[in-house]
Length: 425
Image (cartoon, rainbow, N blue to C red):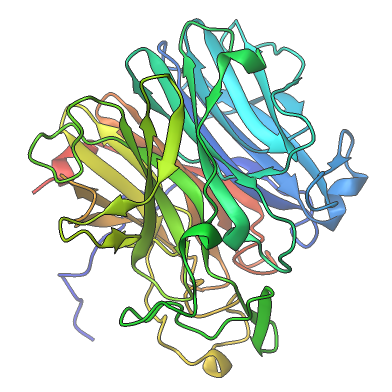
């Protein structure tokens, strides 16, 4: 068979394992978060889940799921070649970032928790609770800096009457704090108003868009086939986007508007859900939907891989938005025809990690496949990224043939896309 010379080559198929499960059948690797310190040190966070975690030292039960979890942090001082385990922490869905003179890690264990390091990650404070008696969610999505402040989104469950996967009752809450403040002080943070998906959308009234793709149960979960369930549609895993191009329809000359780009759980593929958070004169932040020039509510936008957790990163040098996401290839396969080793529904493919770039977050240009596996049971997905000089660092939630399925992977992999800006055309 003649070689296909036009075949897309993987940008970063080789990798270093930051963490590998001691028991792939019962200890799973989740939530890769990534940042690069000014001196070049790389910081990676992750968490462990699965029934086997309860047997590991330092494990605790997650306040939301009741399952055993443990967070872990690693650093690398040689460009990702080797990694040193620095600490464990008692919360999940965390992400590392630098603000002022400190390195922070923020996540949740029901309530929001944060800890910090003043020596680049060698030693750490005790975790500090930022909220009390609340229930939060997220994945290690992006961090945005503007006007001397740090902005990020955590997602709050504001109703408790939905069964199944509760993305329908989740509110993406933009959080703001001065970079010079003590971010371990709850008073340093301003929280935007809360807007759950179901406050915006009636699934029964949606039409002409094919959303939801599968039938749903207003109460929560509907089984379409054995092991393949459809939950109420919603949004989750939110990124913060700000538009500075004065020609963009979403541009705000006051600099007070921050757009929320979210994974769209619809049962289909190729769309992100969006909303916006707008700073008011009194310093409060109000969350609301966006409008198209026609005046119509604009909830969904094109987004390759928007059906799965994605990561958006703005690069000042190219003035481009970079999108790291999962590539779907067979989302129109009938549910009952899926192979046994495919996880969940047809839109839940997780083994091809792709990269795009865009000037406006709507029109995306394909830059390449970061990495992929030969089997849909294995995984390269749920990744985070960071820029270091001319290179793009990628941290992936990964799995091989020993993992039980593509959702529950057995290692965290670190990839480097060399000279990534050269992919622009």
